[in-house]
Structure formats: structure tokens, C-alpha cells
Length: 334
Image 1 (cartoon, helix red, strand yellow):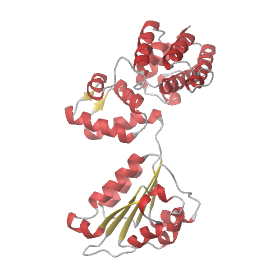
Image 2 (tube, helix red, strand yellow):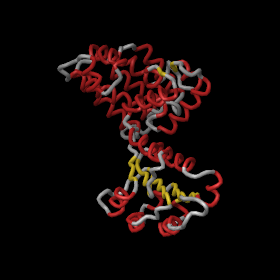
Image 3 (cartoon, one colour):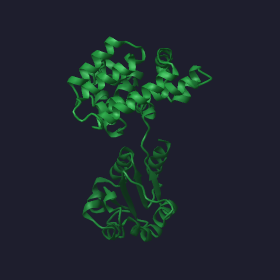
Image 4 (cartoon, one colour):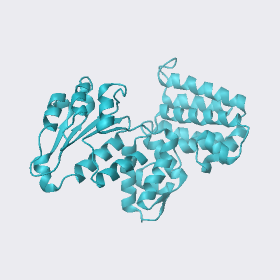
């Protein structure tokens, strides 16, 4: 986030670059920077003649260069934004000659989502020298909760660890989706408040009792009745609780538990650092480690792999997802 803040602050200070090449797997930051440039470089009066939005599927690299070489009208700068520029991936290197000698009165923004260009080639080197080459990397699952906390702190809110975990579990690592839901919450919750799991359930529709987080906790604590209730709910609501997601999250949990068993230093600080988890969740791992010795954890991981194959139709083409989950739960907890 420091890199994004630097880019935005430079733009605010009128220290703009002639080219912004925004690329990478995480579309959220590409959109954030592009939107900021679109909304803040030119006045409303200047935009009519000097701001152009192009789409990769509708133009060629030559079209982009032609527009970028135009001179602004009654303005110091013109802005040319190319959205969905990844559609130009086969010919994007042709932009290199322009990047080596860009029009100083143009701010060219290339939104190259879900892909990256080769940093060893001419185009990347030219942009790095004359403009801004920004790669927006996907956050790992264990980083998203921290990101949620940072976003909410900036807005004047706090969030319970469980509530943040529920958001990550339900929405994954798609920052745009998460930011959208956080925006809804901050509209209806008083500033300065701490967002709770109950508020997540009431306003976003994620059950605080029947979700993968609670299933993981029930399995770790060997609460068989509770775990059975949750998987029964999952079986009745398969679209909201896809089996592949449940298996993936349980596999991550038991893989971390295997790592926990191998730690010599099981102090909270070291466990949090090595497992990359919020200290709030460490007692859950401590209890699970007592219930599942290292050998059993290794067996569970093997069972999870078998269930993953079955969920994809390998060796269980006619087995319902609910039945796969029930069988998996029995093998884990017995």
C-alpha cells in the first residue's frame, strides 16, 4: 500500500509521469490508481477536450499512440486511459518506441489487468525509466484480514478478528468485492464502532454459526455434534458453501497445524509469525494440536486430498457433495 500512496501523493503534488503502466493479478489497485487519475488531473471543463477513455478490445496499439501524441486543447495536459489493455497483450510491446520518447503533455494510463509484461524487455525498461511501472500483486489469504483492518482504520472503524475472517472466507481475496461490502457496512454503522460478526451476518448475509470458520473450529475442538450440524447446513445450501472451498480451507488449517507441531518455540509471538495468523486464533491451534497429534494430522491431510479428488469426480462420479463431506468428517474425527 505504501507504493500506491506514493503514486497518489506524487500526483497530488503535480509530479505526474507521462506513462502509468498498471499491471498485475489484483485489479483493485489498478482501478484505484486509474480512477484517481481520471478524477483528479483535469478540471471538469478540461475533460471534455482533453480526457479520453479507450478500451483494449476496440483499439490497436497504433490507435493508442496516435491519441497519446495529440496536443491538449486549452489545457497543460491531456489524459488518455486505456482500460482492459490486456486485450492488446499480443502487440503491447509495440508501445515501446512511444514509451522511450513519450509526449510530455500527455498522461497515458495503461490498465493491464490479470497479466504482467516481461520486465526484461524493451517496453518495461522504457516505462520504468520514463514513467511508472506498477505491479498490483494478489494478496495471500493470510494478508487479507490485515488489509481489511487497515482499510477500516483509515475510515475510523475497527473490526473483530472473527468478523474479518468471515469476510475473507466468504469473499475470498477479491479486494474489490471486499471493499464494496465494507463500503456498505460503513454507511450503516456509526463511525468509531467495532464491526462485529453479528453485524456481518445481519448486513452481508454470512451466517455467523454455519460457515467454514465455525466448521474448522468445531473440528479442531472435536465437537462432533456441532460439526455435523454445520455440514448438514452446507449440504442443504451447496451454492453458498461449495465443497471445494471447504476442503481448501480445512487443508490450509491442518497444514498449519502440522507446522505448529514441528515448532520448537510454541510461544504466541513465534506461532503467529510462523503460521502467519492473528494471535487471536492461536488458542484454537493449541486446542487442535492436543486433539490431533502430528501423525493424525498427516492422515487428515491425506483424507482431504482424497476428498478433493472425489469432489472433482475422480473415483466418486455419482457421490453427492454432501455425502463426500459427511464421509470426510467421519474420517477426520474418528
